[in-house]
Image (cartoon, rainbow, N blue to C red; front, side, top):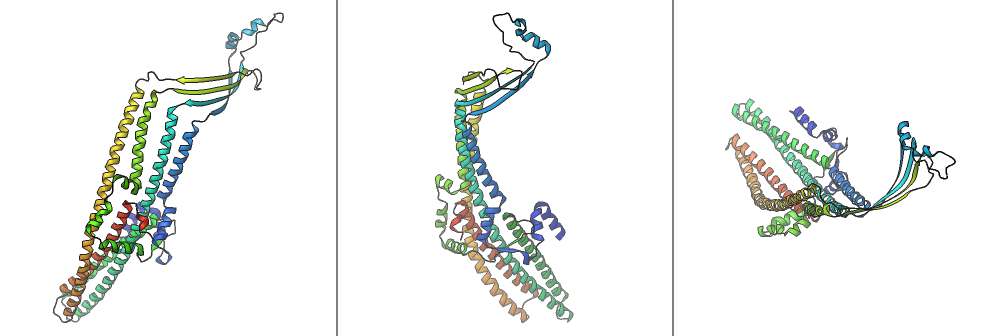
Length: 462
């Protein structure tokens, strides 16, 4: 069983299992929630990738601006022609007479070299202006996505941190009950050998002990998985392992206690936001809105394909001759070129329609995402409302089950109840305590999720 579990983790998260399993508990680094958040914002691969995306978008915008500036290039070419072609083209050989009053210059060479410096510059090109606008919007989108990624990682770190603390607490409770079951089983074995317990009573305690051992193994696996997830979020290196401090930050405790005292209507007011407030709060939604606006800009800019394009070009060259030297006269050429599309086989029209429907698609996706965010917010608040009630119920259940266990334990000592009734009372108390712990941590995690969706995580972080 342990081998299969190791193989599973090895296949899906290989480098983490090496760094975590190779460490003994004493080698683990204990880290607070604030320290975990700070490390994740600095070391997490997703955060790094989003920061690089912002830098890439910034340089793309600069590149869009450079397209407006002139380009200067040096060009040089070498040409060779065969003898027969040279003979056909070189007319100067027919006038190779020193008595002639004029001389025909030689313009054709078998080995010819030509060099020039060329300058090109756009004078009017609306596509280049639109490219600058789109590059700026892309940079805004990258910044929003970067902020969204950071908030998501912070939320995942807080949730992972709370999960480790919860699993450690549950694991300790399970170990206590497992130890108690072991003592009861050993006692039952002694009483059975002494003839004071039946075989059924002894086997019932053995079954109960095996159940507790199975629960402890499961709890240990859950705790190990929670620690692995934390190490993954913190980008643990080989030979590095993390564990969390066994406490919930006071800021989370304080805010959770405040929410537990709020009326249901006051909790629902948390999500009573208009579209603008929701986009301000949710960075991912703001990025989606920017993406929709960029699609609209692309659609509007498609009309530029029907507008003229004006370019300036200037060339300073050295006439073709039979040497590498830059000699003889230097021709200079200045040209302003204007191009007006008259007929492009409907390429402009089809591109215009395609960009229009791309814009409408992104518009529908944005409003769908907006409604999804509202739905998730509503579900999160409903979960908190349910957990409030469950927390109150589980607290009362713990008090009742502990009182009932003490009574049954006293009756057991007097021989008034059976082993099954005593074990059931103990299991009920155990389940009640675990249920109360789960409800408590689930409520705090739900509260963190609510603040994450509202873009207010900084309000509950110490």
